[in-house]
Length: 240
Ligand SMILES: [Mg+2]
Image (cartoon, rainbow, N blue to C red; front, top):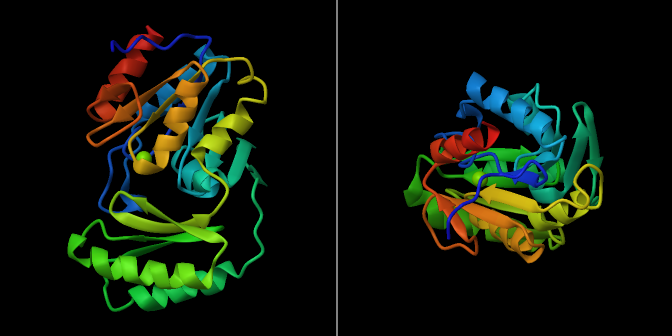
């Protein structure tokens, strides 16, 4: 199916890692180029503000990488929503001891310096980007932690496993944003690269929009682009 250019009337939802930026060895090592910042600002203007980033990262982390992005940001897989820089609304509040979870994850990961513990306000991710041989160990650790925190669900991601709140997702974040101006009434378009993006891709298509899978792997999306550079080229073509 031919990928159409982005209509200025569409609502655009973009994943971050592996979609707007290349996956880096460590999550804090991603590179945001001036061209990407300019592209997002131009898209935001052209779509009348209907551009949102939807990421597994928490909102503060994502805003830190894109400090001048004026649009909406949904973080932590849809648990957090930020309608403007500096403000964060928690969509799914769970009462649990996040520092204790973070501490337990750090303690378990300590024997393996190649592992990276990403502490999130509503969960934790354990990255093995530099150490794929540790995948089974990471799985064991995260299943143990999941058993102690039944309100959290285990979320596989690229070279990581994450515990995040159940009952939320990128699809529910998108559905919520589509009830708000300037998104309401627009056709949703979603681009993402990971298994965590699949429900949002299916949701966009179920509402008459379309989805773009970035990179390899099985997907529900009807369109595919090879990498973040190809997505950037498509966005730039839509802007001209
Ligand atoms: Mg991604």
